[in-house]
Length: 306
Ligand code: GLU
Image 1: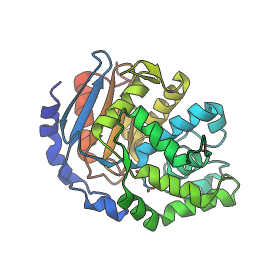
Image 2: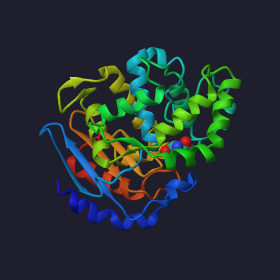
Image 3: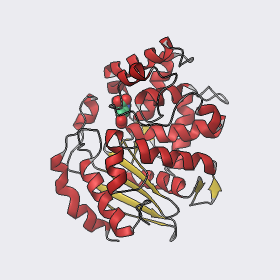
């Protein structure tokens, strides 16, 4: 498929969204960008177009990486004791949903409360801090040794992250989090500030699409059941409050981040990474989702249709 054509068809849609600026450092990004990378599992190759090698903040897509890492280290059943698997119907940083539900754990790992909880489960290991373990695993699963921490974005998140602080203290006050709150938040803000490209995300999607095996060296990185569970979660909760909308029109397990990234896993066929910063009201890349819809139609990868 001609990815350059997909970029040309969708670049103008960058005018329809707004770059996230509630984290001030994210607001400095050039909005007029669209990059796409597709890892084809059957051909074992990766193609890309547009701004596919531009680095940007991974933000919420880190929630997938950290979930995979923790489930791999502790076992899936030990993670699902601490975090649920259902959609909330509330924005990703809502505290209200936990109050209303009187939940005993955050409803899923892709809302901020759930992600902070999952991050808090990582213990120092072999002399490595939780964040060192996360970035090492991110480099491996994204097949991208250049992934690094953007300190400006991290400091900006840390300075302005009071909603996330409220969520973490709410979890602690209600006996849902037993780790050190400050340290867990620092790790969470750092994981969101890792710099990736659309190509790194296509590689991550390819591991998920390939049921936990890295297609570039055929080595298993996460158990099949963890990859399967994660793709299900991406289908039902990966695109914030619009997850149902896009499951019905795109039908490919996808996770977005407010840095403008999208990462998709089309089971047994493709990993897809997209970058385009302007977001819709829910926090998803506007031009990115439009491009993904076109790709899904062209490659016939809607899991509900094919
Ligand atoms: N660092 C962002 C936050 O905590 C991540 C949000 C996102 O990408 O959904 O608000």
